[in-house]
Structures are given as structure tokens and as C-alpha cells.
Image (tube, rainbow, N blue to C red; front, side, top):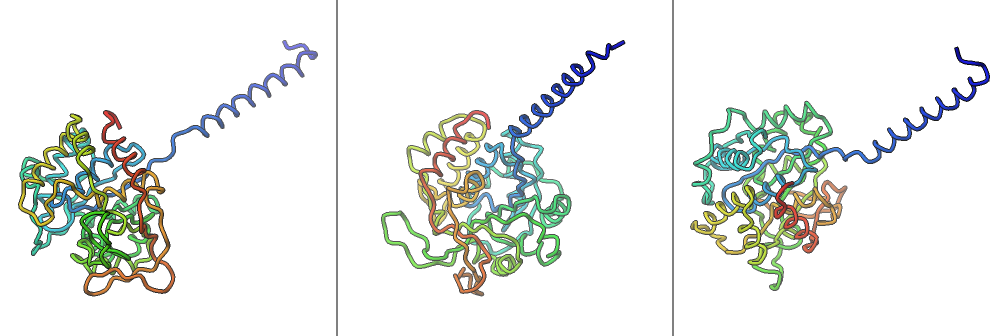
Length: 330
């Protein structure tokens, strides 16, 4: 039996205990890990080497959950085998791989074909089906990271524009807005060029830029960041599963006959990944972009339809890129 004189004290202590419990819960919530970004990667991995470095950075970034990888352009089945092998050998075999729409007439050599041929055939999972299904499951949550010609993207919009419109955003490497390709930062910039990803699949690009989906665009203006010898040797000699995979693919790429041969790869496709991790890597400007029938991305007057990065913060880029890839654990 509780004596009446002690009841107020007991009630006060109970209230204090409850308050402490609530404060503890609020404190834990405030320090809870932020929600991981849900990302589907659509890429033409296997020709140029920058796609492989982009996938490596994604795998080393715990802030990002890779919902799946879809392959685009050319021999998409062989690209899927490349992705399967890289994921399996780096401990990420649970990530789904979907095969995109195959195309013919691709003039670029598949430089990393020998690496890909030792991968396992991907399940019969069409990329467009996979993309639309995942958007339906998580409306407003998924970022589509578009790193190749926009064949799958255009087909998804054509099939179900309403579902595609429920993407959180599309973050892409593609286009050339105010300057074009150049060999180094020490030569004058060329005028805007027809960039490879856009010019390869003009209709898909036109559908994307008129879709109404939020677009973050990284054109060649801001993505021609080259991997110099010091950084390259540090990465390829590091000896982790991810950097070992990069070393194999890099040497196949450099040994292949291809028109962009260079011992210093340009990390075009890595810049959008770094932007996902830290937007200060590539500050954006709202612009209205129109895709012409001959493959140019023109800046025109009107309501902006894309946030466009025109210049990148290269020191910050390399802080992220090198720090992540040289870490033994993501």
C-alpha cells in the first residue's frame, strides 16, 4: 500500500522518467543515419572506361543504395555480364542487373569485352520493365542516374510517361552547352559539340527533356576531369577488390584500338556520382535545354527544364573520388 504522503513524489518521479525517455528517443532520432539515396544506374559500361570508375565509386558510397543497374546501347547483354562480374567479385552480387534494349551500328569498340565474357549471363530482366516497376514500388524516391545513350529512358517514357514522371529526378551525364570537347584544360575550349550520349539517341533525349521530370545535367562543359598518373597509380595499385577490377578493365581499355586512346582517362560519368555525394562538386544553373534533331543540346529562352553544371570543383571531386576508392571498406 502506498501512503498518501508519497503519492505526489511517486507521480513526480514517474513524470521525470517519462520525460527522460522521450528526450532520449528524440536525441537518438536526431542522430539517426540519413536515409540512403535510392538509385538506378543506366549505363553503357564496357566501351570507354569512365563508366567502370563511376560504378566503383557508387559501390564505395554507403549513402547510396543501388536499386539496380540497367545496361544501355550496343551489346547490352555483354554489358550486363560485365556488370554481373564486377558486382560479384566485389561482394555486391545481390544488386539486380537488367539488360537494356540492344542497338546496332555502334561504332565504338567494346574495349572491356574480355573482362565481360567471364561474367555470368544476367537473368531475363528487361531494363524498361525493371525501371518502371521500381518507380511504381517507390514513387518519388528513386533517382535515375543516366550515364549512356538514352535508349532505355526514351522507351520507358514512351511506354508509360505517367509512371516515369514519378521519379525523384534524373541525374545525367550528357550534352554540351557552352563548350565542347578538348584535350586538356590548357587549350581554349571548343564551341559546343554534339556530345556522344545525346547524339547517339536523339529521340530518347528529346523525350527526356520534355518529360517534366527534374533533370540535373552534367555536360562535357564540367565533366572532362582527367585521371593523372599519380592518382591512377595509387588507385590501380591499391589492391582492394574494387580497384583490382578497375585495374583489369583499365588495361584492357588502354590496350584496345579505340579513337579516344589515352593513358589519362576522362572521368565524365564519375562527376554525376560525385554530385550525388556532395552537390558542391558541381554547382548548377537553371537553364532551358532543347535537343535538336541533329544531336546538339541548345540553351534557349524559356522556363528552365534542367539544373545544369557548367563548371566543376575539381579539388573537391578528387577528395571524394580518391578518398572513397582508397578506403578498404565503404
